Image (cartoon, rainbow, N blue to C red; front, side, top):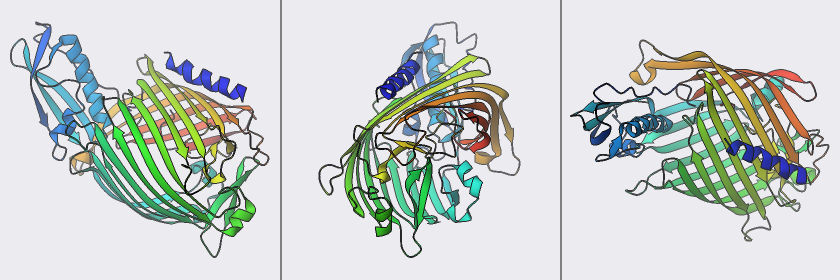
Amino acid sequence: MFRFILLSFFLVFNLSLHSQAFQIDTFKPSIAFKEVNVKVINNITIVGNKTTKDKIILRELEFKIGDSLSNQELTAAISQSKKNLLNTSLFNFANLNVALIDSVHANIIIQLTERWYIFPLPIIEIDDNNFNTWWRTKDASRINYGMHLTHYNFRGRKEKLTLTAKYGFTERYRLQYRIPYLTKSQKLGLDIDLSYNRRDEIAYNSLNNERLQYKDADSDALRNLSNSVTLTYRNKIFNTHAFTLNYSRNTVTDSVVTLNENYLLNSQNRLDYFRIGYQFTSDKRDSRNYPLKGSFLKASITQYGLGILSDLSLLNLNIEAKKFIEVKPRLYLAGSARALLTPNKTQPYLLRNGLGYSSFGIRAYEYYVIDGQNIGLGRVQLRYQIVKPTSMNLTGLAERFGKFHYAFYLGIFNDIAYVDDQVGYPMNSLANELQFGYGVGLDFVSYYDIVIRAEYSFNKFGESGLFLHFVAPI
């Protein structure tokens, strides 16, 4: 435990010292702009926002009408405002220009290209730890299908409305409604998430760092009902506070309890609990999709079980820090550290912590899971931009799809992780030891937040392979 805490401390605080797929074009002041060193913002004109309300755009700006800024301050504010607008995921392109009225007064002209906001898309997805574990078996029964309807800019207020009906390996019905701005000050927001899920096959335990599966031919192995309300407070451009209250009901068959009496704790086949949590996020990345510059910090505390409905009492502490640096033109360094701590030794397997689930894992260990209570994970990557951000027009398509942009990055990486397991999952041999992976990767980044990564990586046992992922590496 002491080694784990020491490692986590080093990873997180070493990063605290000191994407956008595409480099943000800096504002280039004219000769007339430089004649007088102070500018007063006379007016702000927005062009191209056919759907998005003006107040949503103005909320992301680093200046307002009437501000007096030095030329240097205004240039920096214009650059940062452009990044803020692109990070809303409402626009494919954003340009800010200055029109001088005289040597002192200036109008700001914002030109936007909005994204397409309504996506009624069919669901075809793999229900596994990651794409690579599924590819080993190519088990068609683990494919989900259905319909996913998302309105990303509902009412033109940056609200997000999502309806999901999914079938196959997991059956899910879900309603999500995100309202970022409830008040005129645009600081208070509300998220609502209602879902019902059922599965006839679940992972009931781990053995030799692989999941053990149980399939019920006659009934649902697991049913879950979950309802959440989250209150958000964004007092500054980069900082967000979130307070969550959740109610969850989970039911499993008697066969699952027989296989793992700790699946829902104490040999019970039903677990109801409330969950409360607080999360602080400071996001100063130049892009949330594929960052190249900036920093990111997220810290949260979550309590499962409030002393009512069940005996469950589980505390999770999570901290994650990321740093992105431009070493020189086209060469970028990125690093991240994450620590997940749980003081409780008794965890229902349903709520277990571990590496290897979804994107929370160490590269070159895609085929493994490492269950435990406390986790430290560090990543570092050096990327070279082999194809600069490039825009091209696709003929025959609407403007929101027709202007296409892409870039390629070649990188080398190294990951390191430590999982502290005090429960003793069966043959969990990768826990309580330092694990590491390294390799080389090629990233393709495009519009609508598309990222495709192909990586060839090695772990400490000398195992290697080509792995595919669909999110940014760090």
